[in-house]
Length: 89
Image 1 (tube, rainbow, N blue to C red):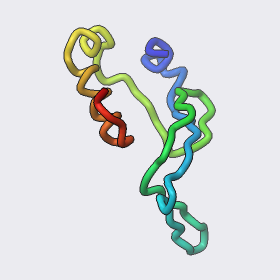
Image 2: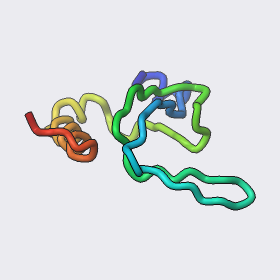
Image 3: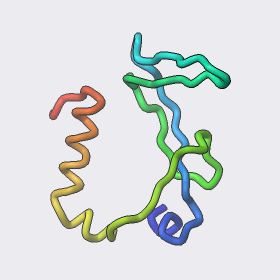
């Protein structure tokens, strides 16, 4: 995936998720817009060439080796757990 993102073959994201109870709202206008405030569960997160959501993007900004050799990987997963409401166990 890293190599394909770096080469520009994969540029977008696609994902499935469940909304937490009361975790969304709708803004009505010419085109209704769904505002997601809280996700209960991510079922799948994928890097793709044809996205489910056109406004998504993904890019390589650092080397994979640098990320894996630093404590940033651990910090990243801790932030994700906190965001999703998971425990640190």
